[in-house]
Length: 261
Image 1 (cartoon, rainbow, N blue to C red):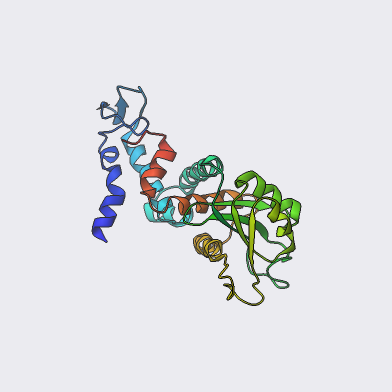
Image 2: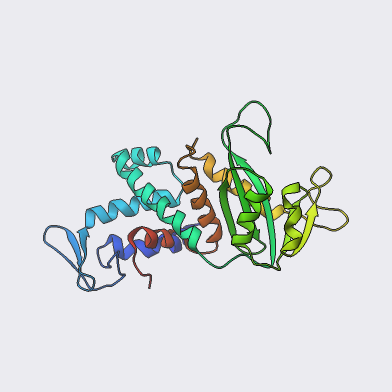
């Protein structure tokens, strides 16, 4: 555990010492008499104290600490932490939307409903919840989108835009997926009977696993407004798609904009 922690956070050591530029990654930096770090390459400068503060907040974001709790732990203003968190989430939202090519190969799809516990119907048709449609490339990336409804038009619009024609599509037997056969091979699993088809072995366990992953992370925040929910969702998507990389290093790059070396 200690070795893993060192590997994850070691990339920030030179930033914290003021020996490396947080914007361009250059080691050609000077410390000024007023405590600033000034880069001789990109000519940007910033207080070393502020750099350390912001890296501390990015660390809390990486560790999925709610802003109010991190502010309390670090003894700083809640609004300061919130500003850094908002900047990160907004950046991750656009990065997640723009990253990579269309999904292809074997693609699983499903919808999920996010929101607090409410009385009444659960699952499809549940009132007052955010509807999220997800596409998962087996052994690859996931893509999510908050949608207004689960009609064929709503879901097929996303599928056409974010997947390559000719892929193998896996879904449950929901009627909105009936026209998938026009885009590629369409295989289904009847969830009223089995999670994995006993006859064909078809399943959508990958995307359902992502829903569990997403809800586990979002639970830490104890309620997210519908207005901000899409940004939180894209944060989870980004974390999932980069789960095999040093996510902390990526977040530093996203926040400060430096070129990693």
